[in-house]
Length: 285
Image (cartoon, rainbow, N blue to C red):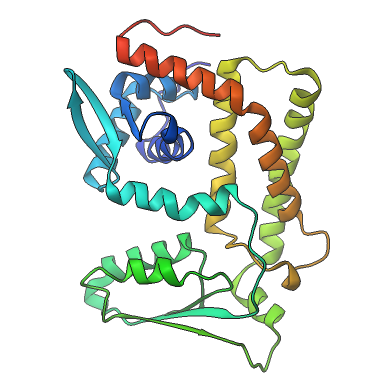
């Protein structure tokens, strides 16, 4: 695959975060710079974009640079590892059935602290909440532990309040959900994911034609594409969704295809890791 020099650092950073989240258990959460550059090149990301992304992620506190045996490595910080622990169950595990209750976050952040407020909104979105009103966000998932962890920050501890309760009307729970989440648009996104990956899954299941390198690239992109649903679907309760919800189909497809390509992908990753550690020249397989 040709390296695309136009890939921006922001996209490269997202892909690197996916790499650490999906393959990090194979390398104790740390990778040599040479391995990172080689692995990202397989997905078409140029070395300059990788280095810019690493610099950005280090400044933001997701990664830290260390040296081992005269080699430069990047490893997940405590903050980075914690974020992966938060989102991994929502990517890899089936959704937990809804208990019928809503988690409600109410916050008050002064206008002069707009940057803090914007960061809080991004974090709430990642945790699967949506705004009912500008400063009132809700989720059907049990996010209490994540919210309480989030508000340990000194600047938020008095600004955020968390409640759990039942919705008593005047609308229904389904209407409340549809007010906060665009169910139709989410369904469309899931159908596009299915249309993209189902033929590839069926082909690989029938013919096993992917090389180890191709399987690595495919798995990384599969997780990257599925991970974006974290921002639009918190695991909406099946009881409140239309029949034949495509999200269920997409989740099943993701897990089947992931399992199918995993052995080849992990062998390729391990090979690149060894080559990066030894300084040997990459080989395609």
